Image (cartoon, rainbow, N blue to C red; front, side, top):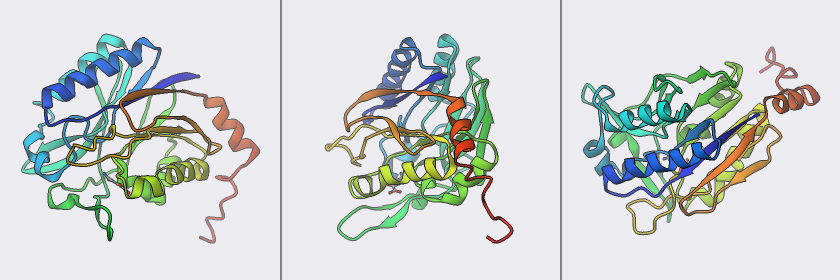
Length: 268
Ligand SMILES: NC(=O)CCC(=O)C(=O)O
């Protein structure tokens, strides 16, 4: 059993302020006993195409990564560094970094599915006007359990989460900025369904809602257990939520209701 924390932070058009706030929230979460602390999608940059190139950093020259690496080392914790605009060879990616307690980058996920949607009387967004797709699935080991990362719209693709599960991920972190059209309609259902189908823990970490900002995130960061229950959930404001992850509970559920074993992969 170990504790995770999700930091739901209001993101502003102020790079230094965003990083400083993340640093303080990570410290606070660690002081309350979290062994893994996670941040939201684009936690250092307003979620809008016009800001991605302005805020983008290269991996080997990134104040954001320096902060994450320093604080993980200082506190001796894992950090799932939400996501940030990452620049490489003229392309910008929506990238999440996992950092270990020694301050080393141990995994990196570039958002695979870009959020290109146009919903009548609702949200319109075209990430691919600004960003390049990632090409890899991300799972990695910790002393606690095997973890996966995907980013926001990636959660909508059940094949990806199933594949991560079959690769051994038992806790998946999803930094995610849903909006006021799809958030109320789909956020809880998607996270509960992915957790339930795969019998895993899954955590969605949103920015806090900001009606004055360029994008109004839904908030409601949450942790769902392998039975499909929401075991921690934020409202829409700035906050940190905590949940205990129990590896034995995953095994218990999988033993009692052996969904993964009962698949008929010879048929479908
Ligand atoms: N940042 C995103 O990928 C948003 C995804 C989203 O809102 C959705 O409904 O999916």
